[in-house]
Amino acid sequence: MTTRIFVWALALLTLGIGGTAHAQTEDSRTYFTFSAPVQLPGVTLPAGKYLFRVANPGTGRKVISVLSADGKKPLAMLHTISNQRTEAPREPEVRFMETPANMAPAIKSWWYPGSSTGYEFIYPRQQALQLARATSQPVLTTSTETKDFETADLSRISGSGVPAPVAADEAQAPAVASGRAQSGEVASAGSAAPVAAARDPQSDERARPSARTQLPQTASWTPTVGLVGVVMVLAGAALALLRRRTA
Image (cartoon, helix red, strand yellow):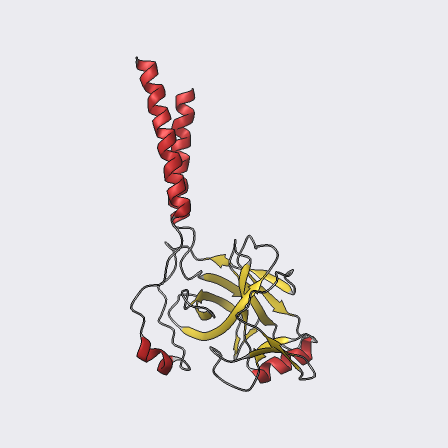
């Protein structure tokens, strides 16, 4: 009986290793299905299913690429800053600003499951001011009118047009996530569709002289190494019991 327990534990842990290795894609790709139009910075998406992914996993300010569900048609390249919450969601999640009934709801932030650090979208100033007036809440935008979202100074603009500076590169205190939530679906590494190369016209010229020569760092192997160690210990114990029984 003891030997059977070890064998079953060994099998379960081996399956766990495979699951851990394929649980998350490097770019956190996620599907969201919207039953009505939704707003994002500079674009309104019709009702439908879309693929969200991190286009630059190895850099500071993250750029989120939004594509058609099959990953073949790029629809938007959106700049964000980190958004810290007190508890990590169990499912992928977006949070909406509460807009009036005659205005498409606007997505404020996106979180990947298991991570309390999400992505808050940076809206163009005019769109941000319109949303701030409609929602009576400050909206993240640039401090001045610009299309350079990658390096621009940021602020949160109120409905009256008053901006409050935002230190985007400093660690933010975790806060309770607010706004209406909608869950999505993680696209696993094995089932995710090929993704078209999404381009950001604003950064093409800046990126050309300093092309990257290394791939971004992938997820840590620490959990897998730990599981392998446990498997080896259990396997050794199982073999020792078998030898005692046959001795």
